[in-house]
Amino acid sequence: MLVLTRREGQGVILNDSVVVVVLESNNGRVRLGLEAPEEVRILRTEARGLLLARREDGPPPEDPPPRG
Image 1 (cartoon, rainbow, N blue to C red):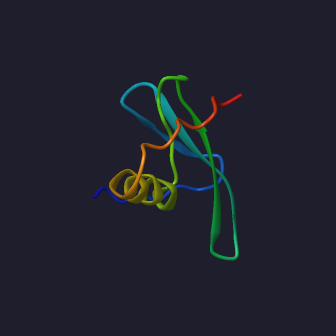
Image 2 (image 1 turned 90 degrees about the vertical axis):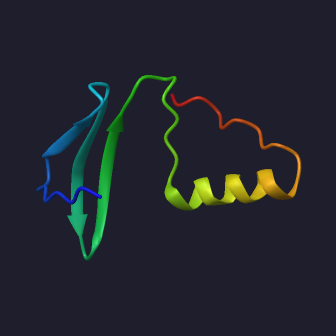
């Protein structure tokens, strides 16, 4: 795992197409802004875990609604 330190307003670019920017940091919480092409699926880690668990236990989950 790569660990980086970023300040508010700073960010990183992933795979030349996904931009992650630190919007705000307060009381141990960080707000991130993400820009990515529509075909790139972005999930929080806990949401990804739930999707994987559902796939193992039942019918396949529906795709999330498109980002707007």
